[in-house]
Length: 610
Image 1: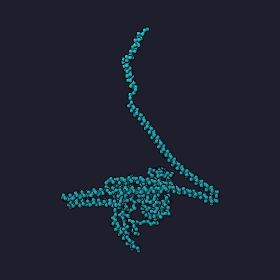
Image 2 (image 1 turned 45 degrees about the vertical axis):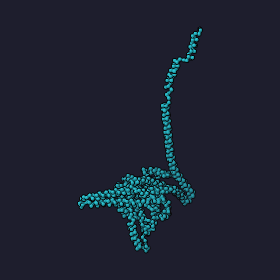
Image 3 (image 1 turned 180 degrees about the vertical axis):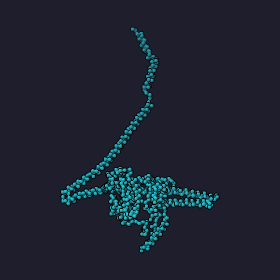
Image 4 (image 1 turned 180 degrees about the horizontal axis):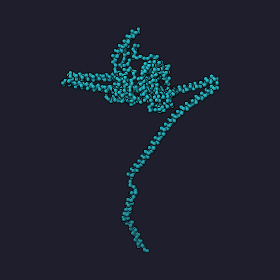
């Protein structure tokens, strides 16, 4: 079958896209992997948009069911099955009552289901236990930590609702392909993704990246897969190609972005962990298998922190898209007076909208048929138009009715399209928000396990030291040399203590370096703040000085404008006026009493005898 092209899928409408995918699934089976070519050539925004449309197309709801017809067919099938059971079994089997019939929502109503009525083949309890035990062994063997002890697996599988609090980190997250009780399988599936994360950030190849290794891995998993591979060498080719496309997407997006070396990846991991409140020092290895259990678990914590940050970003983006879809629907003016964001989410509203659209489309078909009938009745066998005013009026009226019906159909189609777009955006937002909440519980559990992993690592180290002490003791005891045993024991203890001191010194040095970096960073921040304060103070002083100068200049200018003329300029005028006054006084005759006396004196001087 020809591969689907990503560029061609982008051009299809939602309905056409759903139809194409359904045809592929019908031809190849429900679990067929649909390959799409050209995904690597799309920009990130277009790739994300196409992925969302494909998910919506796969999840597109079925059209409303004819409940009466479905009930009748179910009763016929049950009657046939009951008749067969009557022939093969001595006991009578009754047909199910109305409590076992499908409800309008398509789900079975509550009630006792008869033994003859089964909807799907469920694995037995033993098969559930076997699958969970296998996943548990794989998880522990690869370095993972099970959520609960394996001794409780049967109780959990039998009554998972009684252990909701314990199973919360993996209850319905991160994958919904398992039941609530299949915790170990979910954990193993998640741990495999983490191992791929490790290899992708180190640019290492995994067992699924080579086709031969992948085929041998699948051959070893079950006898059925081995038989299918032996009968058809290309049995897994298409599945492996689809897996490689998914892995290509993971390598591009599910990793620490912008990191080209292990050192850059380690620095990015430490920054991410610090943002989440984790600052314990660690050192990554080029090969994950050579890392300690504690370092691997810290890296797994970084992996879950990355997903927490991703879901936080996606939730915000989906909330914006949901709000934009609602604003577009509300502002379009297509909602009924009694419709709001809550009402249009109900099942009754969905049924009413589907009926509204089907009625509008049926009315348009009827109007087109009426127009064709009237036009045909007005033409002869050769297709010539018959003359007649009455018939022309009929044609005009039919065309007007058809146009009105078409306008109504276009409006309803536009209305339903906007409503479905809003509901789709709302559904995506709810799913992303639910995943973010589930990721929060998972991340908290991973954080809580760090001290336990550290304690277990120290316990294993102590056991190793005891084992090293026991080996020379056995050898010395066989030789009968108690003194040699004591010497060897002291030597082993000294070596162990020296190793412990070295390890403690390394940890202390790493912690000291971390603290020194923090102190330097804090000092730089304090110095920057101090410089900023000094700069602000200097600027304030300059501003004050400038303000004082400006005020002084304004005051002086105002004083010059308002004060009297200067004394130096007025002095000459005053002196001149005083001189004129004195001159006038000289010219003015003195009073008689004052002038006669001098004359008398003068005359007396003249006639005084010598």
